[in-house]
Length: 247
Image (cartoon, rainbow, N blue to C red; front, top):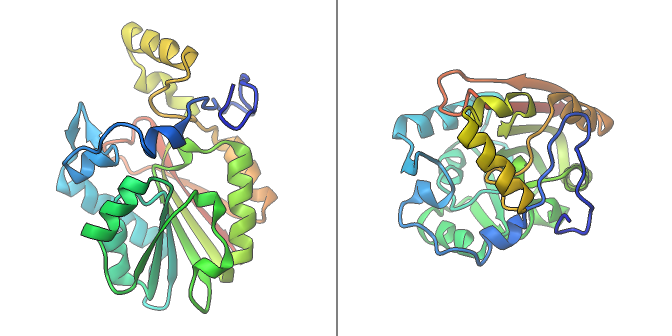
């Protein structure tokens, strides 16, 4: 059973849904790691990724969103603010949103700036009052869509429509690719572990999304959709990025 009460199922359009209680995992779960990258799962084999990988991700976001000095940006599922503070250098205002009390506390303590505000709530719960005039026009979500199901995503898109002061551009990074599931769980042992954890409602990565499914949801809400993969990023063999534009 999904934590929202939705029954488990085989998925929609190839998407493999998550049944894990991710809110409980990130908000009040295990103590935070000391390393900022480990706190937000930016690790390989348990070790933090390189500074070059963070630089590359930041550059990909800045390029995809074409960040400008007049932009009001939402960083959804912002975690500890490690990326948020970098993006804030290019924008008029940034609102970082995450439902983890612990991570938002770290963000406010270690990754603040005069044009950043941090909110502790679910990303899909945002509203127009959360953003300064002239209103929200750009959104990034890094490695966060894996914690969503379709209903949550549709709620987010509906709320973004109410927040938009101008056109809207979304960049969702590092989405687990349902078509590449076996590229990640690439040995019999890893596959068995995936099946064991999934059966127990403790899967490691959450929802594995089908590109066609995502395209359909975004197009239902009036967005044009482009998928991207940066082969130099450490997640390229099993994740993709999504750029969506409207207006």
